Picture (spheres, one colour):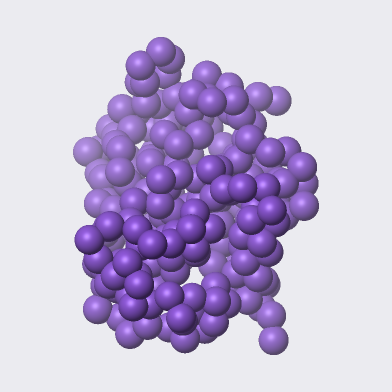
Length: 214
């Protein structure tokens, strides 16, 4: 039976991060099981995910997951990415071409392969293959499986349909909707497609040049 993803409150309190052309400056609470993040290219969407994942440190402000503080610039607190229990699927998938599909999925974790994830993403038959032999849609499913294999408490998706042919986009969107319905993990979902977000997101924020757009 499907299980609704739990809500996880992500609080950014006067967070600031200087970027090349502007400063990312945010105070916001993200609370929906699936939060959409929209905005033009270069608006700061990926930088926001990087902050939440712990890949970048804010120059100022605080970041908290529920009641757990993971960044406090003034106090010098920064919980490293490996201790945040976050699954991250970047735009380029970040797969290792010299490894098999199974080795990519297992990379960085000693957990046994979770059959539920393999079944949901329909990738059991792909395990022995090299990622260089896969289509764009198949590679995206492998990146999703790797992000989910360590049972993260939060999943970050950076434009998961980018670079995929339109007929395949519908299928990948279906996989994402299945994951959201069956796995108890909240998601942050970056995209340019407002119609896409209208279908799946419970809360949407818009960024432009590092600022929230009302």
